[in-house]
Length: 78
Image 1 (cartoon, rainbow, N blue to C red):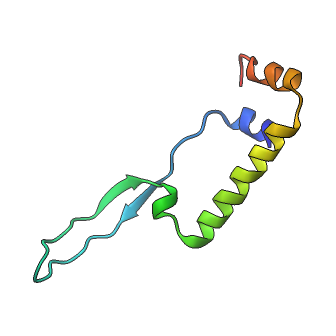
Image 2: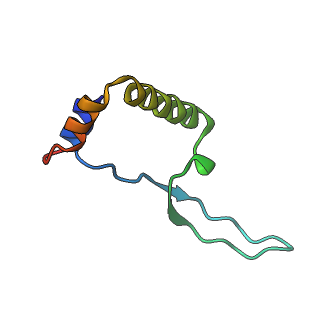
């Protein structure tokens, strides 16, 4: 996973397209728009995947030694 992160470069935010909402008696029309994906607007299946991936990264980072982490962190090409 660390190798994948190093080779694929910095993280880029995922965007989602929010569909337009028609007008109702008590609210105006909301046009279609794009927003950054957050855990609050993820689908339940993707949110579970995101949380498990986050937990896996956390476990890896807490298990490797400080010396190894410092070496990877100091890498100029990562």
